[in-house]
Image (cartoon, rainbow, N blue to C red; front, top):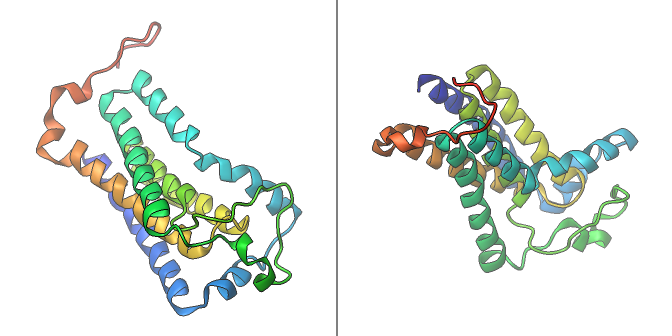
Length: 221
């Protein structure tokens, strides 16, 4: 499982660099001012792209990927995707509703944000801002995919893809940067924990993890 490990390490390295930059910005700049700066660059093409691209981090996408892995890979790959995204989603919802329920999204600060660019056609939410669920899903999903594919050279592009998904939430003013940064931490941490359990811990040697469903027409590996 060296290739899985290499992919996991590369993903974490790029995430760590991006997380450090995001954390520095969040720690050194006022939240609303930072959001105004982050949304300074915009245009019709970017509006269209991010309005649709943000849905790649919806819950249905990792669910679909998990089912594909169950039918066309093995139980280990299925659990890597399903547990990474499922556990991180549960943690996010608990934090949103039980701990940080009073933290509002950018749309609740329209007057204070002034002439900020608001993307047309986006239904904006006002509450449960921290942390970003989409950002969490993006990083847990892409980390899991990097491990399952076991191709270290794809890990960095996948981490970049996750970052772009998270950025879409800031661009669309569904979240502040701090929400996306926190989501990236939760998603990566959850996926790394699942990776360690399934690929590095004593449990990783259990034969049933490599079981494959019988799918008509599928060739044997």
